[in-house]
Length: 108
Image: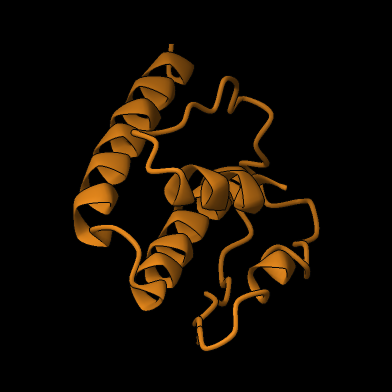
């Protein structure tokens, strides 16, 4: 579901996203990884996407957000819609800023 929300955001050329609470993200890596994270990304003909293979089990929410943005930008550039590099820079800058702020708040 998170991956689809990131895909929606990228396709609509939105400036970024907010993860309201990341304190429930599995920082210890105890939860099993989902196998169908990018299942809905296989809908467009002529698009060949490389889905990331997860080696780490920690922080699945933040990793899914990051991976879904990357895959969505790749999909967008293959479809020839919009300026994917410009959109990607804005999204990643917002994502990095938000993650930095959230992690600094969690350290208190």
